[in-house]
Structures are given as C-alpha cells and as structure tokens.
Image (cartoon, rainbow, N blue to C red; front, side, top):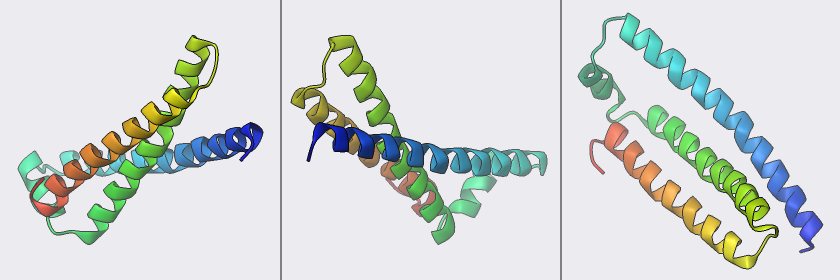
Length: 116
C-alpha cells in the first residue's frame, strides 16, 4: 500500500471515528443528565445498565471509536514532533490502540456485565 493511500485511509478513519464519537458523547451526556435530574444515584444507574445488551453494544462501539480515533491523532502529533513517520511510531500506536481496547472493554464489562 502506498504512503498516500495509507494517509488517505487514516484520514477517513479519523473523521469517521470522530463522527461516531460525537454521537456517543451526546447520547452519553444526555443520558447522564436525564438520569441525574431524575434523581437516580450512581448505584441505581449501574443497576439499570447491568445485563443490558443495548448498553453493552453502545459502550463497546464508543470504546472502539476511541481506539481508532486517539492513536491516529497521537501518531500524527508524534510524527510531526520527530519530523517524519516511521515504522516504530506505527507499531507504538497499534499497541496504544490495543491497550485502549482492552482497558475500555474491561470498563464496559464492569458497567454492563458486572465484572471486569
């Protein structure tokens, strides 16, 4: 794959994940505001998310979008600071993406499945 094609695909992934993140943040914040204004405590909110396939899917997508979006942005910043893109940066950002996925999905499991 050419460098220009790779950069184009990363650009598309960055923008696509940003759109998903924007929607997820709005839904998350609106839900939290609605729940808190409705008088629910954190424990009551967690009780309602436990066992919910819908919330598991929603927050799983949220985590996946973060794991795509953040490493691409950090990759760009690191490459600009170093003055070039290198294979080492790509490997480090792949590891970062995997770390975000693992930690994020553990959090989703804790909130929706009741365990990490």
